[in-house]
Image (cartoon, rainbow, N blue to C red):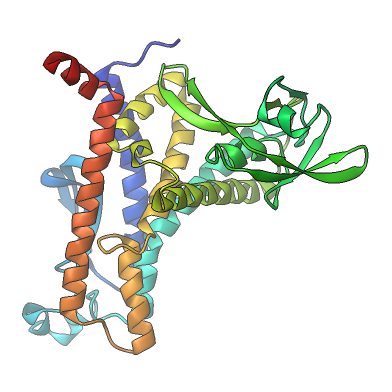
Length: 377
């Protein structure tokens, strides 16, 4: 078992992960805003009192806040979460108002808001494409190299040499598609289409829940079926193919994240599985201790999740703004200010509640609640 990295190293790794992701997300908003002719008053990495700041020739203040858990771009006229023009905005000269956020048509505001999550996805695609181009792409056919005795696969009748064609209708192109398809579905019966001796047949299989530990001693659960792959071959990838591989891998992670969210909403997965900033910091330190490649891959993974979460139609997130812009585009007028105000209050409360839940989970994963229980007991 590897020794866990120290707190200073973990904090540094966390900043190296979170800083670029926040910058990339906010820069997406900023640059598309510039292209749309909207003036940005502030570009901030972090919240709270600024520890470093400067103003560029366009009048945008660039600053770094002391609390590095996010960031924001404040466009001219965008004074609150609802982004509704106020009396002060109405008093501005027409030339100044025309470069403000509220004065833009709904399609421009949509592009500006959408740009943040999209940039996160593009950033991840670029990283994964770089990995594919530099190191090649691991190619292992979805064939059972061996089948564990007493496993779910053995019980279903899968044999060594069988090719897994699909699982619940989803095509299995490479072996790594198989564990991804079953990891979050322990205990659920699945239709597995196999090819054996040139003929295909469908078997019924139920992944089994296993508890495992990584190299740092972190425990986690996942569904497994008990088959191992054959030999892995790394194939060279051209500059043209690499972005397509990065796009495919990003789409797979988005789909998997969507499945996990669906399981949480339907009660098939516990909220105890959610992690927050403290656990991300811990994982960042562990990834950094394994090498720069592991840390960069983690950045890509979190970037995808950041883009996905921000697109959820929840007020306070980019997806919430897009939801109201969709209403405005259809009805040809914005939703009533009061409706938006109450929606964003609800969204704020939901985000705060989620942060409390994931922080509670993070502290539990560090063993804090067990220690307190032992002290009380």
